[in-house]
Image (cartoon, rainbow, N blue to C red; front, side, top):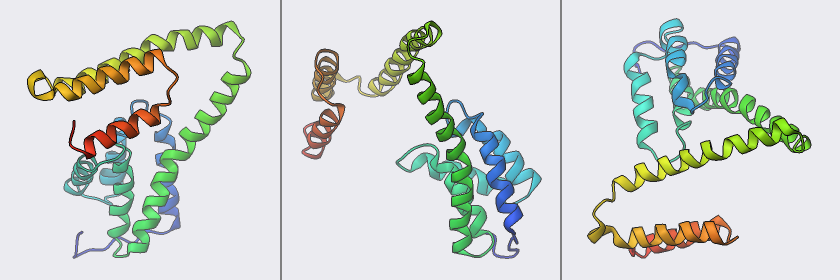
Length: 194
């Protein structure tokens, strides 16, 4: 935190942060990281609420922490609020920026999924869903491949490969809920077996 000069933000500033983030959230296809240049321009260049170093540190902290990538958005709000010298403003910053990030996309997803469900018999909707299957499947395989690439020593990592193959077969051939498989994997990891 910059100890020499404290920011003074009013409700219009918080509202502006909320509205700007809300607008950007609808453009964030691919996750929160895709709007970083626009957020940098708004937070650092336009308003000078954070320095370049503080902005970059927020990204690094969020990427190093477990949890979703959107955590970096919350850290921006927290950091801006702390620049005022108040932890309460840190919480206000988190609420403003996270509500702006999550509310529009959650609302859009809710209404789009309702519309798709209500119109599931339309040929265009069926074609869209059928077209999404290979895309989503390819993204899942690509993600799995990237994760598996770090475990390429079969002699050492064979338990992980056995569990992965077993889960793949269970998903493919049964209706066993994924949460049971996640719980089993967590238990095996906790026991040190994988």
